[in-house]
Length: 177
Ligand SMILES: [Zn+2]
Ligand SMILES: [Zn+2]
Image 1 (cartoon, helix red, strand yellow):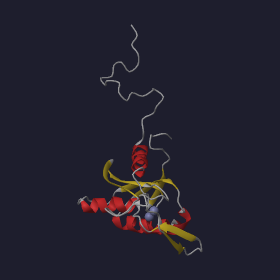
Image 2: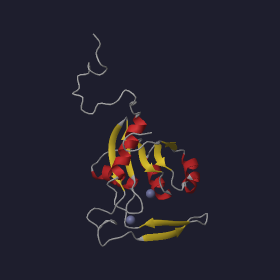
Image 3: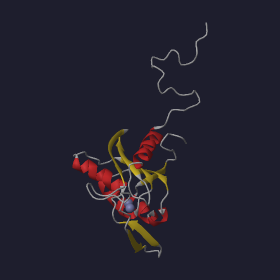
Image 4: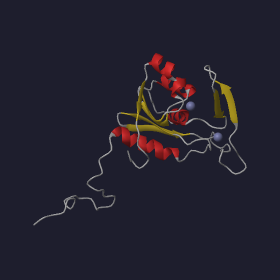
């Protein structure tokens, strides 16, 4: 008597997967979560998600948006407010002054709830800006996992000097590679 593969499983079959679908690695798992979190972002210039992890355990999360209780960029009657600055290499930087970046929101959430994030890693759907990178260094983040490179040339020198590790992880919110 032949039994179909999967029929020995105690699960009800809800959420069953095809045999071709490989199990996610830890890095893919956390980056998928970061992508999902980015869908809560409210700045119309870009949606970013961040997850702070230690020992394969999520400690804190964040996405980019306005401070609590303040108007979001995507609220009706509201809009991004752009601040222009010149990077030392001469290129023009444009940032929305309404929003807190995802990484900083994840750190703020940990601080608010008294969660220690020392010696943790962070997963971000885009590489950090130079301002966030400086804070991540001081928090004691060991590895920055990022999905999409964002002006990575602007942070290259700081990355080198800090010794912080950068690892690219390409997976979407559904775990597709
Ligand atoms: Zn904005
Ligand atoms: Zn930033």
